[in-house]
Image 1 (cartoon, one colour):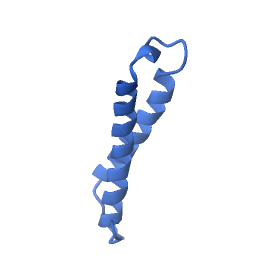
Image 2: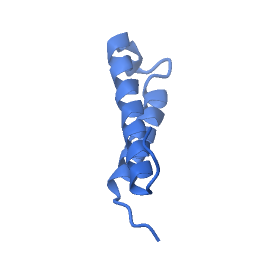
Image 3: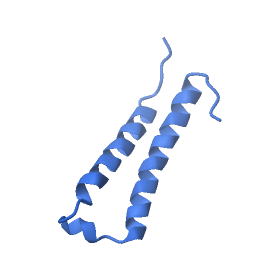
Image 4: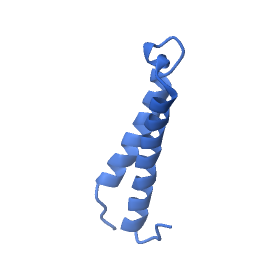
Amino acid sequence: MIRTSRSPVLLLVAGLIGLSAYAVVTRPGSPAAQMSDAVRGVWVGVCLGLETLAVILLRRARGGSAA
């Protein structure tokens, strides 16, 4: 069995929770729905970046190519 660090899994979970929270926080009628487009873009970008980094780290840990 291949041992992997828990950090890639935690990064993946953090990205998924962030994207789920985005959908809840920005629903119409919420006070946070007034945030700017730049803030929304950074939020989604960071969450997707965390997920991408986690997938790359998991592939490297299992011996697959990262590209």
